[in-house]
Length: 500
Image 1 (cartoon, one colour):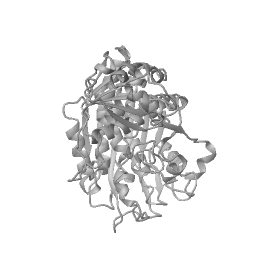
Image 2 (cartoon, helix red, strand yellow):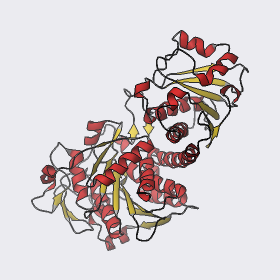
Image 3 (cartoon, rainbow, N blue to C red):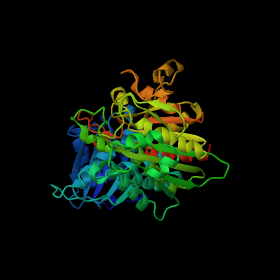
């Protein structure tokens, strides 16, 4: 998608659809659209006056311009109550609008930003939110369908009116296109069926994606894992006929002795639960259990475009978790590459096992800061639902940067505790630690397990089990399907850490 800032009046802007965000309860036409409304013989004003359009969040009404303006349609989009409007909600409202416009066949879209909306954030944040909202709408969850009930189009041109050529906004808009492209790419991977997206296919997709970028790629196979004594990853992988892989991406943009950020993502391409098998209901969604690993790849692709002055390594251990005669069993003890012995209580707590070897690899490669990301626990879904990422850490400075990165990315993050009071939850009577425990504090327990492998380095764990896929019909304020959660957070984190 091409995006630009435009200094043209709304009524003179050429587009298939001209979007005008409207605040809930607004009864008069925004000043920026009054000349347009005049050309439309007061159609917008009449809709607002008669309360036929109320500006409720994600409400949408198209008005045909009937050749009275340079654009074909004017589209009123509700952004809800002004005191609730932030860049997360603006992004989501525009993403929902973009999906509707795509289905109507619109390719060229413009957005007029009224002063009421523009006053809610800086020009850069507005440009980023608006561009990403429309760009993210280009993802098609039904891409494998052979028949469509509407034209399958892409919005390939976006113009933003009302930011007056602000230099920071211009750069934010450019960055937003790169971030959106990376996010949409991995949303396609998360959406892919598990039979078409095995660990080997995952590695091949990454190899194809990094061509022409500044990223170096290395793929470890099973023999490499044995040599490195990755007993936790290999234990999970042995239940499947598909060979495990570990994808390692490097971006060398910083000084030799500077910060070295490691991003480690869970890449379970299908999770049956193993011997501790999951219920059949909704198991098909376990094709998306590689969302964390995909997010790491997406972040690395974006980082290669944004070019921050920092060194970053992306690590994705990837395998299936399947039941078989070779699969690990509850009660087994395995040894990770860092030398710790792990008692297996639940084979469905496999994500933390493969991440432990990924984190150890990051430590051995000289990581100074570590962020791991995973669709890890049902516990975080029950706690935060599909709206937010659960965050745990051992370093407030790094956590603060992650929070700021999430604000820039337009993602919700909520920090949960890792108090010492919880430490006993991962103690094992027969091994160093165990991979599962009591039925409560599940997300915290998983975080404590992972903390055992970071070797004291600043670390943040992001649990995206709820935020990686949105399908709650009750939450109409968040677009459905794979979200690409975490991609933009980690890319912005690299930029922030580079300048810290």
